[in-house]
Length: 499
Image (cartoon, rainbow, N blue to C red):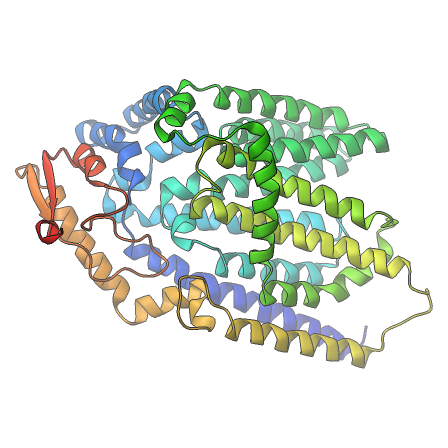
């Protein structure tokens, strides 16, 4: 490799690393201004009271388990999210709630990096270390910055822990499974299999969409193992059985039926499956942005080289597309069946994550399909390669200038999650939100006042959850606040003036 090529590759890696770093620092920084929200109060009220009374972590854990049991009977069976929601950091002090964002965002970045490196790296699809490093930085930057609902991903523990966090663990599961297949040591194989079983227990109590999605992907992996006569396929089958049993236990919770009766909008299984394909295709279309296409196009030269060395035949592009499409749509079936449509922003976030990953996987396969059918003597001049990279970088810039989430008015990079968070901090919006939330919490934590009046917030950063303490809110958070802070009545300033 010429010195200039090595320099350019390292320069690209440094720029991509800086892009990822600069894009996530504001997201971490603004979490210092965040406060508990909505179901954070409802799920952890009893645990919060135990902490106030005892100051004992052991007592907190016991109460969290008891509260999870009650939730299983009365609301839902997703024991992983329920148990973790009971111990949201705010139960110890509202000032510690920023830890929630650190947990959610860091887990996503680490698990995502591990997954992408395992799949696309030197021991996976065959990208070299520099190429894999660039891919990881670009893809994680894209996922974090374009997340459909940052508030429900990183700044609402209850919403994030049961959805994006579960998908982070799903990426970890997939990476561990791949490494288990490739492990040459018996000890390493045993340890990785044990990790898979443990993750299966956790994922079995995660989101219902994620659980079904995981089971279907495992079924495809097991079928592939059977066809290829992989000797370690039975180890993956053990993890699949554990996951299936735990998922069935979660699905059998009495609370699921009670919740369905309360919603009273359930669908038939057949209708839910049909709808999952309809809405799945619609979501894929809405997620296919110029930014995603530009990032994939930038990675195509890496895929081209790796596809030539991996030894695959790439003979079935339509079959692979159909399998990936069907797998993608399976995760929509549970929420559609339960009557909550495709779900809130926290669930839509998971659809986005899986789509971006599937998009890249198929981009690699399609690149290999094209390469295998090109004459071997065809080579692309270095100048043309650099020109292609430059053009795709320009396309990426155009995509940034044209980026606009549905609820925004203006187009531009200020709508990216990191940029939006940075602007909220610089303009003082985040500090104002923090001060107003602290003023609320002073009233709520005053045990001498059993009846309080709270004022709606005047400033809420775009990356945070919207204020629910407002007149005629869609969801009335006051019953949860009353339970959490032991208030008799909570009024909202200005609600009397509403018609």
